[in-house]
Image 1 (spheres, rainbow over the protein chains, first blue to last red):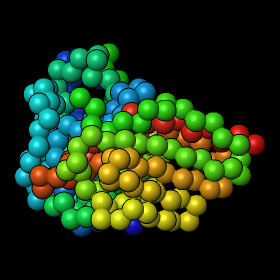
Image 2: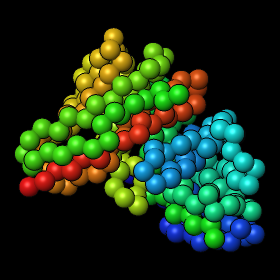
Image 3: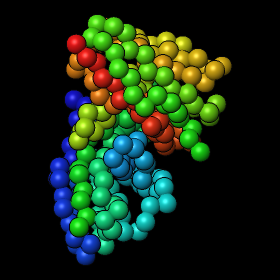
Length: 115
Length: 113
């Protein structure tokens, strides 16, 4: 089973709303990631969690707040977003560390539209 | 500064022929490379990977070749099938302990009957 599950699949939110994206994996992976993908662009890394601790924040605005409650779950809390934040948000997971042979598995993504 | 480059935005191939997708990188510290396939409105699906200690890895119809001296890798799909039509992303692992994945811009492959 190489499944990363993301909910919701689609989300429309106003600029004053607070919402969350959720991600779950049961592969025993201890590294989890949030990526953002705009149309016709490659995915761009936002955050990396390793052993439930935030390891990388790619200078993401504070209106995006990640949370890793346990080794299987990853959330992305959204608040006061802008229309330009509308994108496909991808969660991914892998074994922790840079052992050659690590594969990073992606979820289906959550389509976010900010109105 | 684009560290992973896919210079062909699109490729059209006839069914049954070979598809060759190319990727170049600039960072000699990259030691692990992956290819992903992506359909619209879906997340990237892992296809095949290669470690820098190898020059070839094969999995069914998919073969990835790595030329470290040229900092170039390629994905061969043979025979190509219409279901292979998708965007293919080349990606490299940036070390430092956190598996930071750097993507190329992608190549859209169209396999026509």
